[in-house]
Amino acid sequence: MKVCDAMTPDVQLCTPDDTLRDAAEAMAALGVGLLPVTDSERLVGMITDRDIALRGIGMGRGPDSRVGDVMTAEVKYCFEDQELDDIAQNMGAIQVRRLPVLSRDKRLVGIIALGDIALIQASDGTGMALSQISRPTTQHAQL
Image (spheres, rainbow, N blue to C red):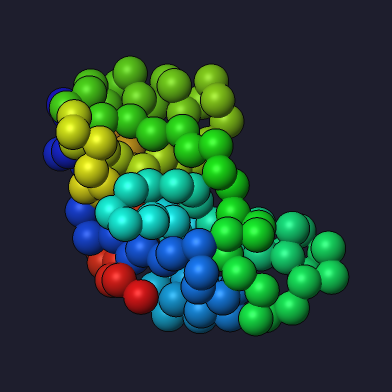
């Protein structure tokens, strides 16, 4: 099975110039903990609820601070045509729960989360439990 068969295709985006408040509100509305950060259609980072809490609030930044100041710039990603099993193993090796999914021309086409993988591979109790703990959302929209 390929990543594109399990990923969430509709992705909410933000920009480096958006505020932490904008990002947090979008995450809360969608029930997600991560937004890809793009600049002119190019993926330049990821912002997580943890980034906002630790690099934002924890470092004395307010809600009007820029996403670009606290985002994670080193982005790990996968391609939509890669094998799902390989990506699941890689996610475990690099200790991430979510990865942006790119087309081979490096355009963002989705997000793959552990919950997505668990739903596809939920044949045992572990997969079912993980799918409930890390439940993927069905939609992300653009800011």
